[in-house]
Length: 152
Image (tube, rainbow, N blue to C red):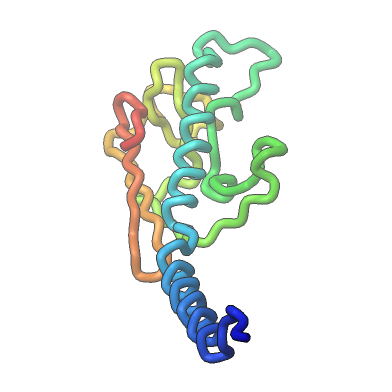
């Protein structure tokens, strides 16, 4: 009388194959931290740009909030809403040319924050801003067009 069963060697062979497949799968399904950081920063910049387009600073009043439509370098990866509060940056970034504050006016044009974030003609930038994100010897760029404010 013979029973149908798997031998110990067959079970060990199956476990080894599963281990090899999971090791290979783990390598290919690692998180893409650099792309995630780029997407998060692009979302932050687009949010600030749309705030600036929606908030007209041309006719100042006594209670004008000049910080609307502006973002500082130190705030690129800080929480603006409750959704972002748990985001952790992995990449390092540099701006070329180096501007501490970026502001967008109602036309979407790019300004620096030298005039107290008032987006005057004197603060209008003449060159595109390139933000370079680096992580694990890889780089991704975000270019902000100085005239239209579009992100590429």
